[in-house]
Image (cartoon, rainbow, N blue to C red; front, side, top):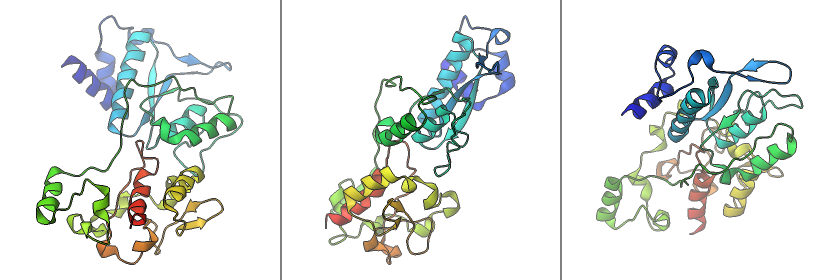
Length: 283
């Protein structure tokens, strides 16, 4: 119970409470904690770049406690960043690491984010390689695994699966059940009009603007109809809607389309974007 309370305390970042209480025994007291110092003499706390998903917040909060109370360094949370590559650029010293088309990198960068945990690095090898190549003096180091692996997939409630199965023998957990030549699975899901698009990013603010990600999409699906620049394979929106990227087969049939809202993180690497197009190709 004490550990849970301390984790919640750090995550809420209540400065007064953190100054008055400790999570662990034998801590380095607040007045004795140190800052980092660069060769120019600038002093600042150790920065933890926080990924913007639940496990990212949790492990960052744990590291925050351990580094402050056990190692005796002042710590400040940075970010959060909605995608793993944001951490690559933040740790390299780029000023706007979450802006995909303008990361704010330069030859002279000061680093204020020094550590990031819970990165889904396997799906973003090309982005990692880009940072290592372009900014070798400040590029981050991969210190190894967190000790666990994660998987990503679409989530369907058991109630939804049972409704489709007992109504017409449709197994929504199996990708071939979405073959529109034989079935209409969209009737088990909300129409896109139910989505508050003000909470969505525009297509040109997402990984659809990253060449390597879209190269993978094109290789899997063979679809380049939505590309605004086919030489660079940057994806644009279709049908005049900057929030949607439908497969060309479905461009004019919103009422029967089944839309996937993809957070693009953690770990998806465009998987959700590829999934519906692959299912259409399977026809």
